[in-house]
Amino acid sequence: MVDTKLILQMAAKDREERRLKKEYGERYLGMAVLSELSALTPENVRLLKVKTSLGKPEGKAAPAAKGAEKGAAASKQAETAPKTLEIDGFVTGERSMLEGTLSSYVLRLKGSPLVKEASVQKSVVEVLQQNKAEGEVLHFVLNIKL
Image (cartoon, rainbow, N blue to C red; front, side, top):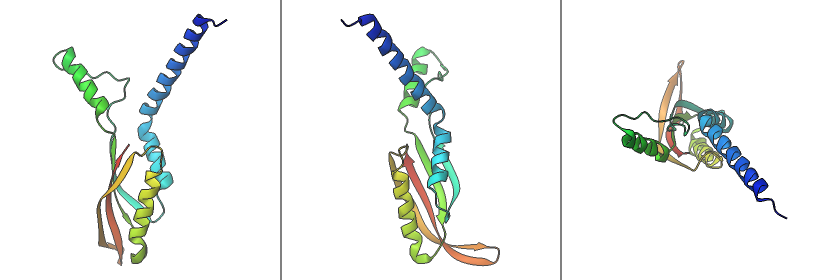
């Protein structure tokens, strides 16, 4: 015979475990993104700027400015706001390999479980002067949806 009380307890325990995992995932998303970037970025790709927009963690309550309704609306907006990452960097190496290296990097990022979508916003070959040495680099800006 099926004990409904036991099943309800197991279901409640499962819901609580899922809630905790989701909370931990949101709390440490920034750290996970940086870890993933460092693991996927090849040696000849240099990151100049990494800008994130991760929204507020679900556990944090949005302060109500002028009433509970406005606070609830702001909280819902924060939840639905897309989590994004903007990467500004450059690729070094042989001129003929710059575009291929960037394409390979974008594909590696797209293969990450954290990345929903990745696109190149800007890709321009520039001359880099560093310590009296000159070379061409591919300056890029990537937009990533998490």
